[in-house]
Amino acid sequence: MNEIRDVPDVVDCRGLRVVVWRSAGWTGLDLTGDIDLASAPALVATLDGLLADGARHLALDLTYVDFFGVQALRVLDDLERRCRRLHGRLVLVEVSPHVRRVLVLLNAQRLLDAVLPERVGTGAGTRTGRADAGGHDERPGRPGLPAGSSPRDCMS
Image (cartoon, rainbow, N blue to C red; front, side):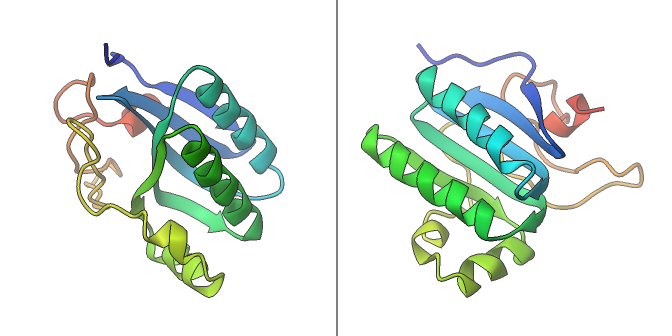
């Protein structure tokens, strides 16, 4: 049975905010902030916990990642390999132009090939990247959230 949570989990990984949502066999992570030497170990621990709890198909939204360097690439590369070993899949739902540029410069074509411009599975929305006057994203809500809301609404 696929579990849909009413409220997504919010994890603070030392300056990197991670919102975890679940829908239709997918576990999604909306990341906001920096993936660097300080946040990477906490992010890896969060990912370890999700995989230990049975997550196999992971969808990452990197729209709001401000810093993405070699350490971030190592985390994603290791995560992609682990998902494959578990007969799962890692996809990047959205990638900011900055993150895309870093992935191209670091020759991470395999990860770029995993970018999905549309929805992942049934019910998983994507970010539009637009904000209203209050700084809130104008995008469809995630499964289990009130219509018009987003995981970022739960992060204050």
